[in-house]
Length: 247
Ligand SMILES: [Zn+2]
Image (cartoon, rainbow, N blue to C red; front, side, top):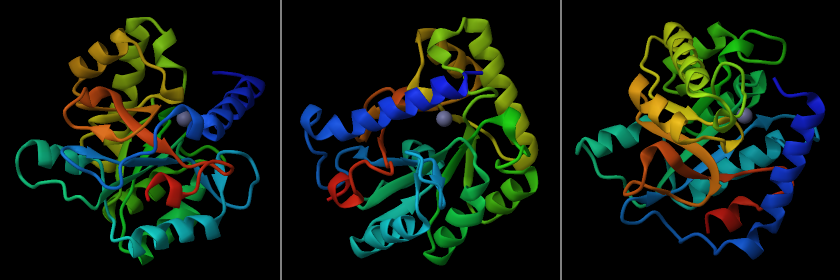
């Protein structure tokens, strides 16, 4: 586990990158097109003022913005159906993801998602489930029954890219099994903590049965690229507003 100090430094760096992003990256395309679509990543929704938390009002505004702009949310496992040739991904597709498995995802985000008829995917740290401030098994079961998807954010939230392959295997396998035991559904997508992964990570994920991997690399996800290394667009307290991310 990283120390709180290291974590806060990582957060500050992430936010700084987000603020610098308009200068470093070209603006995303207006809508999903030709296999490219946006996957947004949130962390916490609540009253805290840390960089990873947005307010309930801000989240409500984001959902309203998506509704007004005609976006439709799907869980990331819908990509699988699309890849199997079942249904095309419409140009108004957006995927909402949450990392880290905080209890406020259930308390604050889940009711708003439901009231808007929207779905999201939650990537949880399996060793922290049921800990203070984190999602419990019963909360996860309730959310999954309401159509929310749950994926792996590993067991311990260590940066996979810095671990040996056997450690990658252990992190990916154990978290997959533990989350599947709670939801009764296959866990085939992983969000890499800190966006960190290596060739060993990708090999381990593929061998264990994951077909999707979510990074912190900024941009639209590309179905024509490596599905185990999909881009996302981070939504942070001080980062760019949704109107800038998804014009
Ligand atoms: Zn995380």
